[in-house]
Length: 398
Image 1 (cartoon, rainbow, N blue to C red):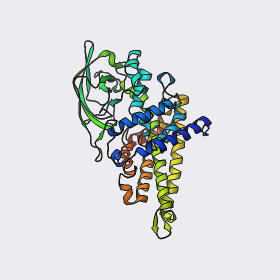
Image 2: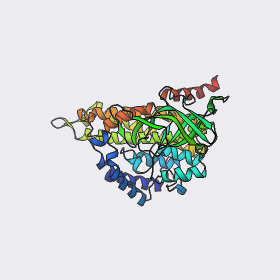
Image 3: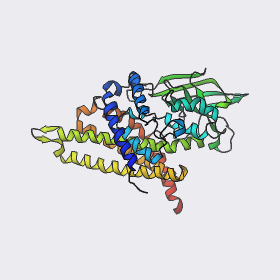
Image 4: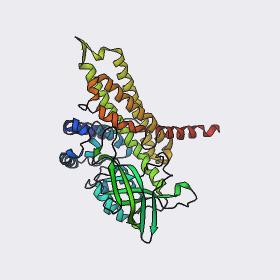
């Protein structure tokens, strides 16, 4: 693999980074970090239009759907730059869970589903949510679900309770994973994915779950949703009945590249803030934090860890581009449990370097520290991914 960044991507990274620092970082505020995302929506729509006019809309999305059509390896570089602000991915229409739902609809949706749901989602006219995790079942085991979708004539009747249905607040539709084939011989063939418009009777948004003191709003929210005799036409089934687990795996592979490069971008911004603080903060007259060996160690360790993480993620993205997500299964698991703790370590050092100010919402550090603790949990907890890698590594010895 050639790790040289192509010249056209280097140029894009420079231009997009300038946009992020000129147009988005000035919008950051204690209100935003306190969860008031919805209050910024009018001005964010203007920023989204600016992105469209520059031809940067949805960098990863195929040209036919209005995106830049970049391969995963090239998009990974841009994703890192966008992550320097919590607003970056949203303004460029490549935020979770919409990015994953678009991938699902592109790969497995039929023409009618793509016209009704994918097209407006790709254009940024609507938002979506993904409804899989359940409060009474281990999120690490997506084959064990209580939510059912029973076929009755030309409809599915969905009943169940989900939580961490991220971005359900204000979403136009959900992609729901529910058991359609309870008697299937293989546990991986029991569930299906079904599109449920959020205005369907029986789709009940119970609450936005408070996450470490932050309820959130609109896109930046995590909802609990109850499905009570929620009826949708069978035409809303994505792919084949019983293919839900397979579709979820196809969705989550590239999704972990998106997450990991976003984490690296956050870590880069945190390191930048730490270095600025070290170079300018006096601890005594004429003596700066940067002269303290402990702080120098933090900076050196962070630099090495971020660079190592980036190379690992780019290698994984390259393998997915060349051979597909299935061939990169081990690498996908490795980047998940390798990069997430590095993000936490860098954020922790940056907060420590800022002292009391690091705990405030005057900076984005405490926001990321609260919200990205979940990086070691969502999309499969780190422990499960370590088990996957260990199992594959041990196979030749067993």
